[in-house]
Image 1: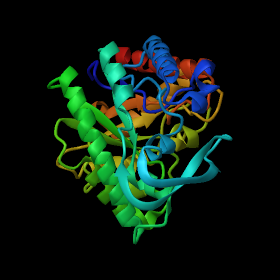
Image 2 (image 1 turned 90 degrees about the horizontal axis):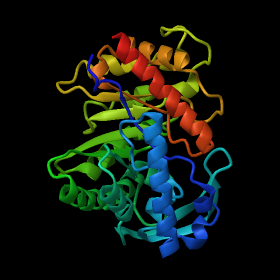
Image 3 (image 1 turned 180 degrees about the vertical axis):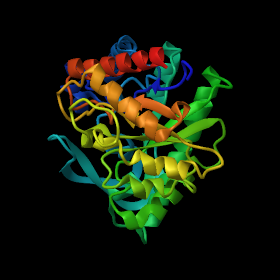
Length: 346
């Protein structure tokens, strides 16, 4: 086991400071908004560094209100009809596609530009995936769900290409990590072919990137694991702690939330190029702060099930935006402490 095993990564959002969140929609797009989002990004990056993260994502997505809206509001022919609930009393504006899906402006250029201008840390760009955009939109134009998902995939592919060009100006030769966020991926098991085709299309033809997929709160990860031979991503970043218990103990019997990693390993072992697995070891939907000892038990159990620690990365289940910044920091800090303890032991 090397120091690069069990990389500590951020995989999503983080609670915004109140000075940004309280007037977000009123000032969005203005110079004031950009200044506040940049300030919040800088402050959140420092929180992540202090917590011990080694991949800082994009600093908790301070430029984005919500994963669907962040992309949808930059698409032509998408009309917002009203608010729908996602979880934890969080809401987003759901849109309806009334014509061809066309990217009218970049989704995340300013966000990435600011990060590249201000930090040399390891970064990863999360971007909402085409299947989730399709599933969360009404469709008044395309003939079927596959066609709409692929239309979103083409818009996302254009975005990633442009961001890769920007990345190369600052970090030539350095791999650009891109995380396709697909929380809806397994909600319709009969549509896994749409997930595979649209995600592959979103990253098709773009060299020099490390694409991964993030899925949270799946009804059954077996549906996702079954796509691994066809899905052209290098890794999966998944949640496990939300389905786990809070008592100490190591092994799949005492850590029920992690038992289906056996299926991941079973399929991964058949691949000529194995995929990595980002393992969620802290639950982002509770304020309970798991101890380093509990997180250590979860990681060691996952290591036994996956078999090769070089294929594992360590992360929260999902973004921490529904928790306070203080609770979010402590969850990340304990996660980091657990990993460093394991690195010393092995």
